[in-house]
Image 1 (cartoon, helix red, strand yellow):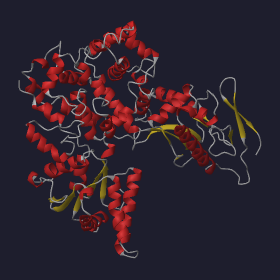
Image 2 (cartoon, rainbow, N blue to C red; image 1 turned 180 degrees about the vertical axis):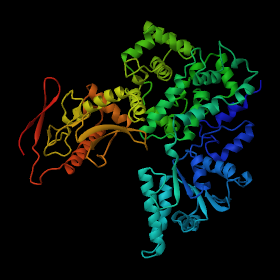
Image 3 (cartoon, rainbow, N blue to C red; image 1 turned 135 degrees about the horizontal axis):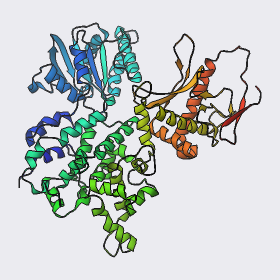
Image 4 (cartoon, rainbow, N blue to C red; image 1 turned 60 degrees about the horizontal axis):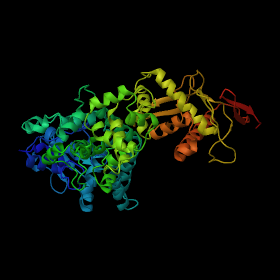
Length: 622
């Protein structure tokens, strides 16, 4: 029986150390060898590149981002599709490719790290002249990660003598690029440089993951390459590759795409926690879900022959896509080296649970939820778990030659996380309770609501902001307060780093009031994270805002758990200190803008909690 060449081609994208399609340079070789169409990965900054390099007033482009973000892929597409370059000339000699666009010379440096020191010294002056506008004819297209980019100009700056004219020019470029990276800006301030700085690390979104999934799951070779395979259409012992593909596509009886949606949500949570997953790693993830096999850890990808054998033996425990999604088919050292699996490992899927969810797995209660899961996936659930559960309950596990019940239970928790629907809120029967991020569903809903002004769901924003305020007040005061409408910027006296404080010299900052100061929630347009800050309103002038409290998913989880009753220091000392630093910055901000007589002193107030849980204050002097 002839194997589907697509399977072998996809395996070259997998997590094996020998994968040859992880770098863009090797993709075309793999395509030719296997005779299938290439995977069309998205190029989200391609249009921005064309606008900058081909527009009315063209300027140079620098692509930055981590390894695997698609810098080389973007450049190759631009060279061939937009600049009409000769594919035979790609990738150029010694890392530099020369072409032209609209009659202007274009020099392409496809990876700054690949240039020798001598080559960098040759290129630095030309790039600098182009960026400073001294040479308005020659354009540059450069790819580099942030560190390489800044080192390029820093080294040039340090090589020059103190009074050399070039030294000041290199410093000017270095300062502007550093500022653009720090502020996440694509364009410099007016007149400083002629460049667009496009950061590919900010481009992996749900749409990106959808594009990768569709390119793989809807590839034309699935139908043509598997047409004669009996396992491809079997319902009793289906091909595990096709089974895993169907689960990702949501082509089951109810058409639910829970697996796909949960992957997108998990990757977004990881990215918002500063665990960026490059496109190359997303390709690894999707391929591993489809082809992952745990029998041979050094060869963790299924072939068509091995897939038929797994189906014939009903050995689906080896091909479990929910374990593959967190890289359990890969050796631990290799798994930890891959960004996507390292990021997903921090969720704790499989080890986190609660009584309600384990009752669902072991007792099938509630029955309707359990039945829906079995309808959605009849292969990786009860068929693998019920016999082990029965032997475990009978105490005959060892006698029956069955072991590893705990591992089997963890596998079912992973299946539950990726496959079950998420109810509104953060109830006990929620897939997010199977991770350390119990409130991730609320976090995503909160961020989504804040994308519009005014918020798309003001009631949800109001409820969640109230819980965040309670968590902040409990963190700052160390008291189990119930105040959700105002923040008390409490501190300790005599200990700047105290864990909690019950003193303040400021009035509380309300959430909803037409007062000069208030607490507001907004979405950071650069990072996509919600943030809280104190805003001061001055008649006739723009509002002033304090340094924000950036609500990364971990910090959001911390505040929500503290609001629910967790002790601040027991959950995360780092998060506790972040809240205290925000309070100190907000206090200084208010004091610096507080209009009062210079001889006036602010009275110190001591805080206590009333019977209703609200914070009360009492002046104790100055």
